[in-house]
Length: 68
Image (tube, rainbow, N blue to C red):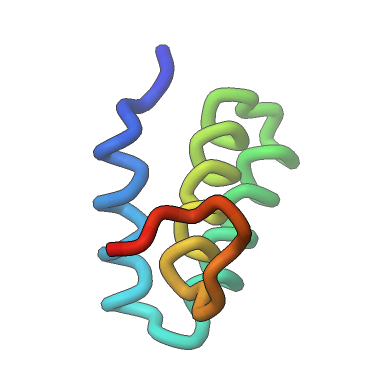
């Protein structure tokens, strides 16, 4: 079962709040652990969380991004 998108973003924000500059490392470690344990669903979830963390940390606007 896939994790809801809103849950991924909430997890990313929580990890950023708790781990600050180590948030990416934390999510990467969890994804690696899932991969090593053969947990495909966990790997998918943590990869999505890592992507969300990177997006939340992004400072520059990309072409086509909406203005807020």
